[in-house]
Image (tube, rainbow, N blue to C red; front, side, top):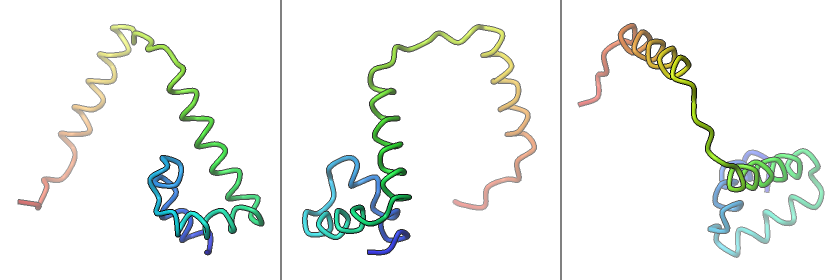
Amino acid sequence: MKCEEMLAVLNEYVDGELDPSICEFFDEHMKDCNPCQIVVDNIRQTIQLFNAGEPIEMPVACQQRLRDTLRGRWKKAPPSTDH
């Protein structure tokens, strides 16, 4: 398995939803590929931090700035051609 192939199924692997036969190739690749090990470890740590975190209320002024920015960008966006 190449890094590109691994990255294509990374989410399923981390979520434990990857076909077991593919997991074997994934695990073999991970044994010898430090960059891929780092990517998987970072994703797992991010998920753990997210799950352990408490929601933080966004200040009203920040909410308004975010809304204004998104509305401005939405108005500038070209119309969608998908129907």
